[in-house]
Image (tube, rainbow over all chains, first blue to last red; front, top):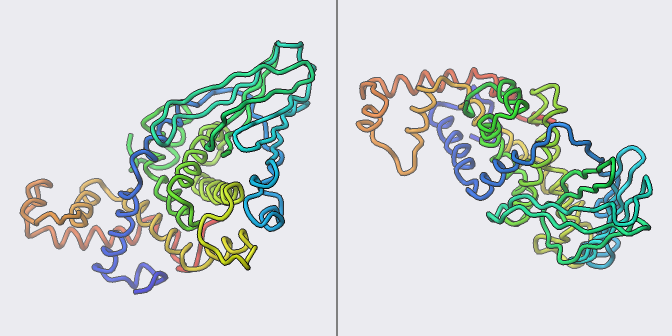
Length: 167
Length: 193
């Protein structure tokens, strides 16, 4: 029996052996990972307008080659999200996230950016850090650790929600 | 509603907000997500991040999913893509020759070939198992149990005579070979998009 033997050519014992591997793989999924996947459903929102991830410098062709290691180590990673006329530009430098909201000029102090984190695969609670956007649209969040996050920009009359992305 | 329900039913129910249906979708595909992460040589922690991101993305994507049959392909593609993103963000995730700077190229080479086929075959077998009638699936799972479960106990648990366990196993495996999941992965070299 090889990995590519057609099903019909496997005898019953061989098929059972293949099944055993398949079932064992499912059994080996850590509970924390299964729980995190189930809990993801609580982030379901029926009609949230979702921005697109337009650019991620981590995926630039050759980014890993140029720096010879992780692109984020030598130069900040940049991410761009967009939805219609709205855009969110984010720069990740270690645990500091700096960004700019580009779009309908928000009144000073009127716009906020929430950095949301889902219930961790490690069992940590989901959380949200909210910062204000300055008059020029800039914001800064510190102490951002790695893992999946998303950004929600809220202002009078509009909001922008980014897709989830691993920082 | 559990993982043995047809995928279109599970997707429709999850789109309507049914947590049980969502859990069943997770149960069905979370091993595949993990297998793809392992293929990419991700650490357990990075695998957790990729897995969680895939499921969070699916929550967002669920409403737009018109064709439930496209879901497995979407999960595969999204998982592979997020694995590559994490590798790019974290840098090298395994010992590499310092002379060799082709991080991404190396990864792509790793995931090509037989590994990919084996991952898909294991997923197909799990889906085939889900297609079987409950009684036959339970028999096969008991026969596969580790540590092993004796025939006497299987007989008692399933309420079937010991003498019919062997013949039922043979019929269950014959039915397994004819499931949609195995028939659609008939060509051994075929890898779904």
